[in-house]
Image (cartoon, rainbow, N blue to C red):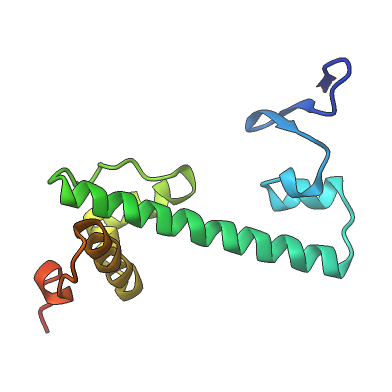
Length: 133
């Protein structure tokens, strides 16, 4: 473990590589690491979980919006845009970006909404997603 002089940031070697943190319990991305480092009250733990869920939702919406932008530019493919690290395994297992988007009705609906916003007009869902019964 190392610390820079006059700094509140700590450098720690971990099995996953070097990690930096500011000492805040909300900086820990690994649940096991969080539990081993900080004892949180139930209220703090609930706040932490809510923050984590909100951030995950933002990341998901951001990635779907990136896919809509790539689609508008005729560049959307299985590997473009690159998925965020936290989604990479899921997207790859689904067969790439397009297959992953098509796998969930909520993802498809948000994709249509993001694409419509980019185009500045309401695009019918069926125009983008050809669903076969």
